[in-house]
Length: 149
Length: 412
Ligand SMILES: Cc1ncc(COP(=O)(O)O)c(C=O)c1O
Image 1 (cartoon, rainbow over the protein chains, first blue to last red):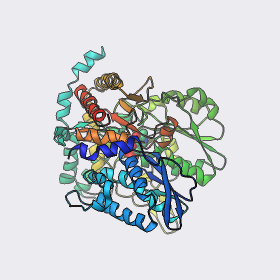
Image 2: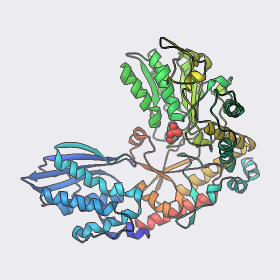
Image 3: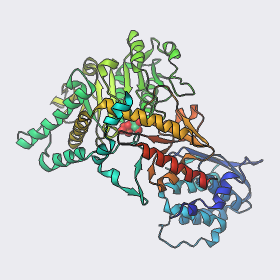
Image 4: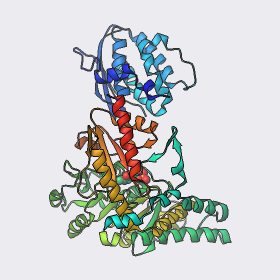
């Protein structure tokens, strides 16, 4: 597979100019995520009102894949209900962990589909999913630390 | 002079001894620059291990039959080869373990458990591998002792000026890397040992990264313990060595309990076997010891001075050409270095560098290299690391630099 399919323009752009790379104010839920394999660290912040994610953001250091994934995730989830967010989590998870040869239906994931290329790079799947696991932990509790191992 | 020695060193002939090196990765010739993680194995090592299983397989120290005698002999011969390799005074001072990690844990759990008490201190350095941090942290936590850390400079050298102040009458042991796996820094072990010994403090040296690159003489170093891994010395995984000074080993309690480490067992009391068997409970990695012995034979047949000169030349060349790549900064610039080139490249994360290089057939390690406190100290979340061994060539360093151009292209 061509590296360009992994490092698509959209991904490189989100890496260079991550969206919602900030601590929202106010914030009422947060979680930290680690990828012990490469030392990536991310904190996801949510402001949840009722069952709606009113605002969210992230901080941390990571590779292009993990940063772009976090950036796109925050873009997509803003204004969504917790239930929607959980559904996105499942669909995203299915997409990046599907066998490289399998057809994946990712239309409903919209622009998140550009990350499907990580399936060809098993070592990088965790990079793409770190932000999502951290977001899920943030939804579930007020203070949480997750690890991809 | 070093040019002469190096040219007498025929790297192409050496490469032919390592079958894996002829492989292609993603359609490109393999450029293996991850030797600090593990080294490749020469055919002689692979053959010796196959022979051990095919012809001499039996348990050791237990059978009266010929095969057991042969297996025992092979195992004990390997011990003597390692003794000579490290110039240890006595073969009984060579304990077989799984690797450096187990060697350090053994000392922490036996010497440490007996000698470290409440309020005492263990001294390590800021550039240690997690395996020379965590075992000490565990024993300190258990005993209510304190883990002290010798700081380093921005270049990645130990702050030797601060050593005296950190060696106190509460310091029970000093544990230090011979060579840093993340930076390549070669530490002044002899000086550290002298200073520690003046205060009667023993020194453990983590030799994981040293043995493949320089002759090691534990008597010249003067250290009390020296731990190493076979797989970083062109030998197999799952076998390593702990050298320990005999008087210390004899006074230490056993590590694990089981067969082979005893001389008599009743339900009331067990009498332990003598050193080194006291520390080798259970059936050991027999084929692994034979493989490690073969790796040492392989190295002995080479001229280690020429090997070192070749690696020095590669390091100097790599430092020059890598340093000239726009945006690249080499991390770890000690004046006394082994052939490790850790680097960062502008704002491209090392993990992305690693993936792109892999597509070009170039294998490097990226991440924190099991040295998180060191990465924090140097203010980098991770580095890309090319680590060289005796079979690497200048052309391979050129391939690394060429692949970095691809990184630049994608992250333009
Ligand atoms: C400096 C250093 N110490 C200790 C170790 C641990 O060695 P092993 O994993 O073989 O036990 C390593 C290898 O990763 C190392 O580089």
